[in-house]
Length: 273
Ligand SMILES: NC(=O)c1ccc[n+]([C@@H]2O[C@H](COP(=O)([O-])OP(=O)(O)OC[C@H]3O[C@@H](n4cnc5c(N)ncnc54)[C@H](OP(=O)(O)O)[C@@H]3O)[C@@H](O)[C@H]2O)c1
Image (cartoon, rainbow, N blue to C red; front, side):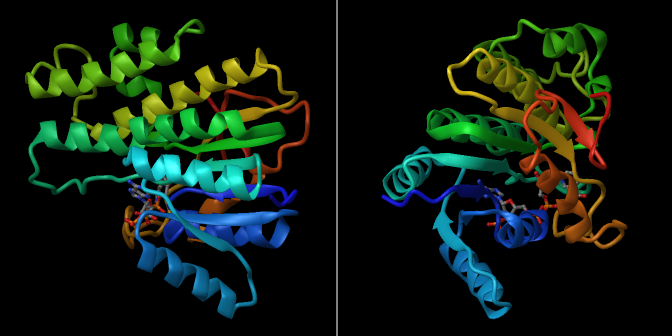
């Protein structure tokens, strides 16, 4: 087992995730793991960086697949015996013009963006070492105000537990399946992506609370919006480059001790969620 420090970026093969990997690789004292669900895309991205003289390590991770998560955990445990930075960046978003049924959009989007990230956290949090940093790449599209007040209260509650949050997200999916999501207070216009990111920002608060009462010193968990960034997800009209989008997540990965935890950042500043 190596004693090296180690940073992990999910969905690291392209877009903002790739820019986060690249930026961490030039600043982080330790190994940077480019986690990607597709082996050829992941390996290709590692090779692209290698050609620029930047060393990172590709490792397979599909956050919606529990076997893949377990194998990833085993790899980290065996090779490093711990984890120092976790950037939960991987996500999907249906295009606005998508004709996929709303129930399918709700199921798939929650499955990857919320449940997948939650399962990665459940598997990898026991490996976090003192002073670790967890960064959840959320979105301004996941602002609490997209929900009606009854749901806002539940998501923002300081006593919300992880399993209650999971139940709320499952409730969203079943309300969409039953066609009652608007009357139940979920976003109107419909946004499976926005709802999944509300869930991720709420998970950030819950995880930060868990860490602050745990036995490991100085573990900070924050979420952020990277801004509107030109990627396959957001399209060509977006004004920011992936490198600009990586700035706030990378800033959060290097927060000094005593910094805020459980909060939502944009442009390196705490903003209302
Ligand atoms: N771009 C924006 O303007 C914007 C704004 C706000 C927030 N964000 C957030 O920023 C993050 C990065 O977005 P992006 O714009 O860079 O998107 P992107 O270019 O579409 O990249 C998404 C990444 O997530 C990976 N991914 C998707 N499902 C996965 C799964 N099940 N397991 C593992 N990896 C998976 C993709 O892998 P494949 O290549 O295999 O598909 C890809 O590497 C996301 O969390 C997104 O919600 C983006």
